[in-house]
Image 1 (cartoon, rainbow, N blue to C red):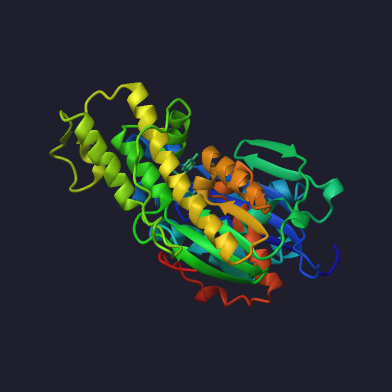
Image 2: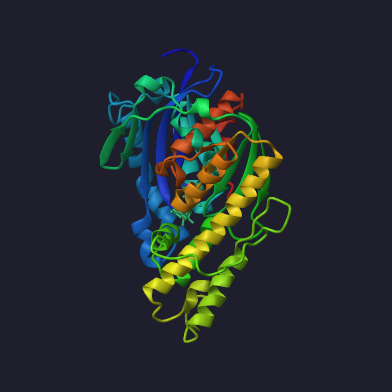
Length: 399
Ligand code: KG4
Ligand code: ZN
C-alpha cells in the first residue's frame, strides 16, 4: 500500500443504529480521494417500534449486544483474509474513529468505550468525531481513489452486496452551502474550503426531523415518523396553508416547533372529538388522540406539512447560496432521505446554475461511513489524535 494511504475503522453508536465502516484514503492527494471498503449498519427500528420512539436505555443495551459483531463484520468485509480471533489490527488499520457526540449519552458511551478498548489493545490511534461533521461531509461519499475500479462493499449483518458507483469530486466546488437536517439538528453550513466551515444558522427549537416525527405521532403513524409522512404525502395535496416559520427573518435560523403546533391546532379544529389522553407520561403531543382521521385527510396534512418544511429549508438555503456565491449545494442527514426535499432543492439549484449534490439514501440516515469520511477529512487537515484515554463521550458536543 502507498505510504500516504491510510485505513480508518469508524464506529458509530450515537442513537439507534450500531454501525461500523472501513475507509481507505489518500492523505496526500490534492482533493479528497478515498474508497469505502466496508459499511455495516444494524438498525434498532424493530426494537423501538412498540414504544413509538427511541428508548435510550433500550438503545444502549442493544448497542452493547451488537457492537462486537458489527465491528467484526466491517473488518471482515474490508479485509476478507483476516482470521476471526487472530486479528492483527495494527497491521491493517492506521486509525480508529469513533462518534463521541452529540447523541444519546448511554449509546455514545458504548461506542466510545469499545473504541478506546480497541485502541488500547492494538495501539492504533483513536480519533473522536462529531456526528454532525459526519453528516456534513457525507455528500463526499461517492469519491474514490480510482473511479474505474471502485467497488463499494455495502453490507447489512448477514447479507453483503457490492455496487459500482462513480466518483463525483469534480462536481463539488467551493464555496459549498450544506443543508444538514437530521432528527436532532437543522443547520445551514458554509464550507469555504475542505477544512474551513462556518455554521450560518440552526434551529432555535425543534429540528426538522423531530417535527416530522412529532407530526407523525399526531397522525398516529408508526415510528420512525419521517419516512411514513413522506410516503403518505405522496397520496395527498398541499391544500392546507401551514405557516412558514422564520421565513420573514433575514437570518439563517429555523424554528419548527410552531409548525408542529399549527398541525395540532388544525387537527383540533377539524376533529374536535380528539382529546389529550390521561394516565400516560406527562407532556408530549403524542398523547392526543383524534379518533379516526380519514386517510385522505391524513395524506393532505402530511403533504401540506412536508411542503411547509421543504419551502422554509429550500428558500433559506437559496438565500444563503446567493449571499455567499456558493457553487455547490449539498444535502445531508436523515431528512435528506425525503424525496420532495431532494427534488425541490435540485430544481432550485438548477435555476441558479448551482451544482446540487444529494447523497445516496444509505448515507443520509445514520451510518459509520460518514464518520470515517469526516475522520479522513480531519486527518487531511493534520488534526492530531489525543491519547485514547482522553476521548470522552459528550452528548451535547456542538460543531
Ligand atoms: O440523521 P438521522 O438518521 O439521525 C439523527 O442524527 O438524528 O435522522 C433521523 C431523522 C428522523 O427524525 C427521521 O424521521 C428523519 O430523519 N427521516 C426523514 C425521512 N427519513 C428519515 N424525514 C423526512 N422524510 C424522510 N424520508
Ligand atoms: Zn444523524
